[in-house]
Length: 393
Image (cartoon, rainbow, N blue to C red):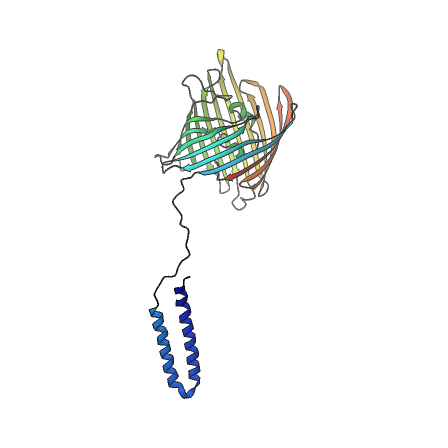
């Protein structure tokens, strides 16, 4: 507040107070009543003249920081995955390592497309050396007509429920046996194009996805061939709202593409997911039941053909606000030999300190019909800094 404002506020108050005292004392003297009244009126007129003559300067307002336009910088986040593990087989049973560091860069480019890039600094389980790779890097359209959406780049393909999700967001530490037998530890993650269509169905949510990719260098089921064959995928998602507390999702997937024997592998998959999360207790209680089935028809050299099956099913329940418990059953035949069968049982306890940090411990027992049984344990600590977008529901 400047000097002029102080003068405007203090001087009139002082003069009013003086006028009040003067008039009070004057009216107390009965013999000079008329003179005191005249003096009081003159003093009040003087105050009024001074207030009118003061310049009408607007009061100063504290300076405020103005906001600029939308920032051109992308949202940047880092996700770290630290683990310790135990396995009952082999000479070295215990290990501790930083499994992966994922850096994300995500932003809207303009009203027509957005960009998402995920750089992974991962540890090779064989050489124990760290290397950088582009886990995902793609552009997504934002304004195509007819409820279409186009994705171009390197992305996790739309196989069921597990493959599109980054591993650190799953409620268990290791991948199901059937999933790794067909797609490997990293899943189907390849360069290509994806076109999705939101089916105009008023009864329930329905989405159709078609993807064409070039084929991965390292994948149990598919390979990048020397010819022009690509890997083609189709996925139909059906999502139902059962009540205000429960939803049901049913999906079908078909994949065909070249394998490492210069022939063709076809895989059919189905997924079923039920989620219960009560509106009044959604912070403390929830339940998820998820199951996926896989059927593989692989053709190899010399006319040899192998058909195999695989599946997993897990039940995740929320015990309290921060505690989750997940039990999972795995069944898997080897894609190249259906006579080799694996069955496994696992239990995972997870503590979510906040949305930026969680600690999980998992125990797993595996039975293989051609080798001795074995057990495994993992402890995983996930923490996030910066921005990180939400995963698929």
